Length: 221
Length: 335
Image (cartoon, rainbow over all chains, first blue to last red; front, side, top):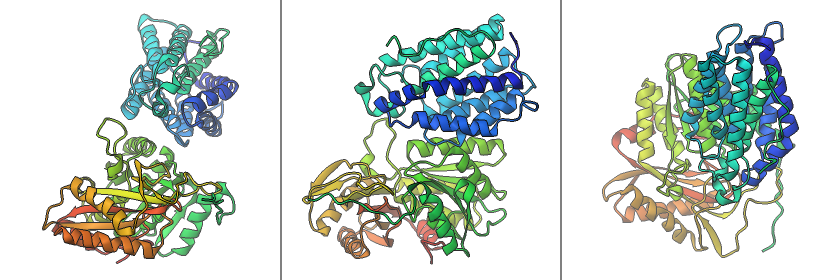
């Protein structure tokens, strides 16, 4: 188990994220069709493809260049979720200026990215958006880093917090984002952005060897 | 009424924007250059040290914005897909292109996606050391519902903002002065629109909505969305009066004041109809003792082939009129 995210680990994280996303895409599209305009799955899939095209070769990759590539890939994507993910990855890249990032670097970058997204989108916890998963994940990771958790422990706690946050969106009426236009109709439907945040942290925990056999999100809803 | 099947003069629905921009640039080689990678239309010769002006948004509103690229207006137009914001990456590329050393003013129509992507692009440009000021255009009176939602939509007043800011930039003003003046123009401007028929997306055989012969959609935006209500079909003068009266009242235009007026086609109204509408805009305002200092009639901000029109009024003063009168040389506006 590694305690640093070097270029190779960051590349593996995005590979794992892309795989987790691909296996969940049909479900996410269905969620967005119920509460939005149905383009979420296609937009994020194309952002991940653009990221793949921009990723540095394994020999040259650092944590920073991998997250920068992801940032550029997501910012070249339509819709609103793609660019917000792009801003988040950009702040993570800024937080990891060394060859390899420790859990404290990642936690700081993730918290800075959360704040950027909130500044742009205006959403808070409870508004039924990606923030419902991202903020608890960021809080858990930062707390873990302060306690001296290993990278694996930190990412696992963040993944569990993100999952719980994503599950909570089923009970919420959207106040921001596309789902705010349909109100009560979106009750019981998980927010696809929040689910995708959970997938990202699950992929991170898996990549550093701290993952588990994840049940599909929304299975209990 | 039989539902008409809409046909389009296109090759491939997925190539509409690339092919149209290519054709546009081939037509005006002395005025503009087309950058295919990010779907940017730039002024043929950018002026070193002049504040750069960038606007953009979804396509389907032609001649906006590419038609207003050139001397005295925009330096770069960033073209998204039909009715979809350009990406942050595209806007960032356009902003960098427009910067010739004095920074950039971005003119943004108020829509969630546009605002988000322009803000991200401004933040990326800031990282590159390019100072960016933003002017948010939110002139559509119909979407003024007073609560904390997304706010009024941006529509045809964006033409007035681009003209005035473009003139100031040409005179050598800095980005902060230009943006302040742009925001002032927005505050002085309101628009309202009606439609008899919705437009249809390229490749889509159906219009966005259907109306009965006795109905007119009131308070439409420029994306084929429904308006705020339906009014009875009536002669042009009656319809125009229902647009002008709330505009004058909202802007609190007083007897003796002057305005700049734009009677704008939404893509499916023919020039004769627009001139008939313009006639009554002039009559109504003259009757209220309001002078129309300058005006335009024509299709400037369309909604694909929507059969409708909007009226935009901007409360004018001498300085604004002087900026309006400055030389402009673009594909869609020249004097």
